[in-house]
Image (cartoon, rainbow, N blue to C red; front, side, top):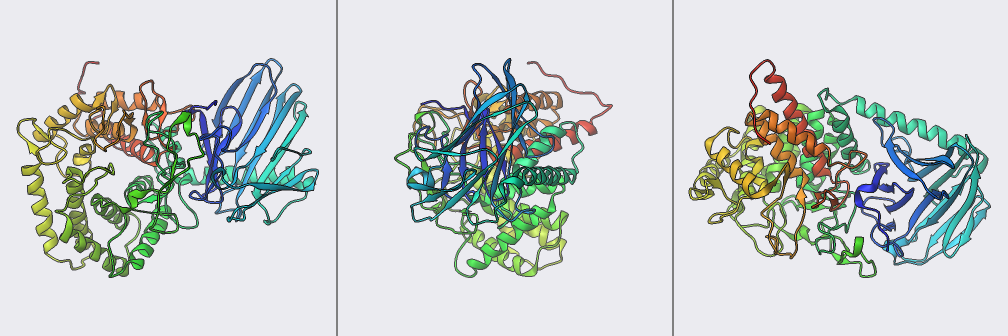
Length: 610
């Protein structure tokens, strides 16, 4: 089977779901109608059984290019050949403007007379449910799923459609300046007459472009890397649910962390950790509306467990805590990478770090957006008190270990953050708080310096007695636990560079035949950790080195400025795509590096050897 590389895709979305559009004009991934709904297109995971929506010119030879219209999530794909030039504009009208799930594709011949072939071949419910096709007219059909989901999709076209082996195809020729339009939506929504389709598409295109441009214009970032920061912000917004206020960790499921390996997870859910970091990045850019929607979502989660339980580490978009994991055994997997998993059993885990990340986000929200409500504070008090009783326990940690719980340094660090930020928030609002929070914070502070510091290795290690360092330790100075120039930290940073850094790229832990998470096989470098590393360098005063490595990392983005979770040996993208964590790391590193460079202007700069 033939698979486009992960990095060959652009992403469009409507704040309900997204679609991945390949350089070759094929939409090979889309869940519908929501991020965590079953897929209707998943050729990225199985070329024959997954389904796709393809539009291609029938050139003998051609070059393909892709770009976003500036400061938008409207994607342009161009096909260049001596025979002619074709162009596809792909977009989805956003939920905030248009209360419908629609995918719009407009095809135009820019030069020459070009013949195209369109194939719309949905495979419902992750490719498991059969479907029928009902013809409404020459230009409209409805795909009707025969499964329990009862989903029906309408495809309206400006050119005649034909049915062929469960798919719908169209062969058409466009002269220079002529266009064809295709509209895929849930059947039963308000439909438009075929003769009005071009006008409908044009109106929605301009409205969608204006929405994204208006949204980007609200950013307060005016630094050196505006294009990349804006693109990362647009990705984070795309991964946000307008209906719920929650944020998915990534747009996809089942994409491997190493090709042919078994680390193929479903990231279409809201991790408290990832969403909290997203809120942090958006607040830094001035986007308080998205932060407010997430805080309201958190309020609902707290109310749902009031007096009964602790917060879960992750939820579905609408707050469902049960995310049972199972395998799609009929899918071959990306380049044969099995199993292809949906759901995520990590929801059962104990990950104590989520309390620090959430509390830090709430502290920043209260400081830079608006005061949190009294009821939310009382609910958060209960969660902080739960942590007071349980922070000493081992857990699965940030990397979601599935083989053994440990007393991870990162979990202790974020427990310290939780108590520290809770106290600061309470003091800022003159609200009472129990004194045992301060006792816990101080005890953790002392424990980290005593129990996690290895005099032998001159570094803070992953857990007491370990000889290893972990990339999550890079957050120590970023969360203001330790000075970025403290001798203990600089010694730890040196150890991380020796063990985990390959050029500008950072592994989450030391590569081995059997990784620390219990799964065999190597994984790539974690791009978010690379951006954390850059931020540590800049805070420690190593500005030339930080800028050099940051700008090298920008070169690892795909042609559209997008990142997956990891990078492989040859710089190929690995893991789910696009990954929110990577893009928020980029934003944070850019903001900090800009500040440090501005502060050091007209001062002597340091030097380093490459």
